Amino acid sequence: KKRIGILTSGGDCPGLNATIRGVAKACYEKFGEDVQIVGIEDGYYGLINNMCKEMKQSDFSGILTTGGTIFGTKRTPFKKMQVIEEDNVDKVKAMKETYKKQKLDCLLTLGGNGTHKTANLLSTEGLNVIGLPKTIDNDIWGTSVTFGFHTAVDTATDVIDRLHSTANSHGRILVAEIMGNKAGWLTLYSGIAGGADMIVIPEIPYDIEKLAAACEKRESKGFSILAVAEGAFDKEEAKLKKKERARLRAEQGLTTATPRIAKQIEELTGRETRVCVPGHMLRGGSPSAYDRVLATKFGVHAAELIAADKYGYAVAMINEVVSENPLSEVAGKTKFVPADHQLVKTAKALGVAFGD
Ligand code: F6P
Image 1 (tube, helix red, strand yellow):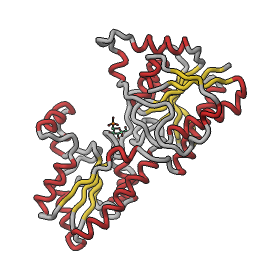
Image 2: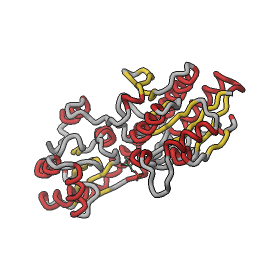
Image 3: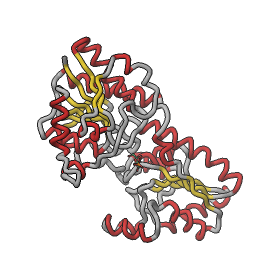
Image 4: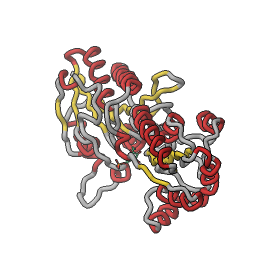
């Protein structure tokens, strides 16, 4: 029997179960009785600690529409993989041992940038690994889209939609802080879909005076909506090294720029300003139809790679075709929004201010 290990690692997102189901169903179709899927609990932590379960075909029924992950997930940062800490565990060795103990023929890792880094490490250590691109941040290098992203765009858009009526009723400025880690994809897409008046993303450092001026330009409308990425920073911060920026933020008691943006805009415009942080709501819920289809396509492609014994790859959408990139090319990179991206130009053409 072909034994296929599957784990989900890092922050969850809608579409993980749809992808797992896609892999499983396609494998049962291809290999029939000759396949055994082994679910690994809590990501790499479960691989390190041999937390594995032989799955039944029926375990994959009814999960297409569910949020989260049936296997559970944990953040096990790449940095921690390579060091033998106080616990004295050689994690790479432990993961290889579990792979051997479970007699796995291959390992599928569903995750984001950190997950792909570890997947690449395991691949260079001789394991047969395939990565699948999961994240609401859409920041995995080499794929135009990740599963989970479009569901989060839908949810964030709904948040921004709902801010319009209350901002209008009260004549306020409302600042929505949108997840996305260091990239601005989620904010850019939902900002456009939700009709935000200003979009602030890390790839385009902002000038607070310009954002305030854009709010003032809208004075006749009586309200403004800002979509601000959690990773955003201003032009002064952009000049600093990452560590220095983090130190100054900590001194100001800030984890994100959003509260500061709201305070400064209120001071500069004299208009009441409020902040809305949907946070992890953006990671929850049932995957959208788009993500169910995407996740299924990615899952089926992973099964095809297994059938072809093609390992050391990360599944990807390349020029609208499901394909793959070598894990070694994906690992350690981040896909940011180019400052001249078509969607940035589209938004600017509508008069949306980026504060640049
Ligand atoms: O990577 C997904 C993500 O939701 C980011 O957008 C966010 O920065 C981070 O995870 C939050 O992480 P945690 O769930 O560990 O708080």
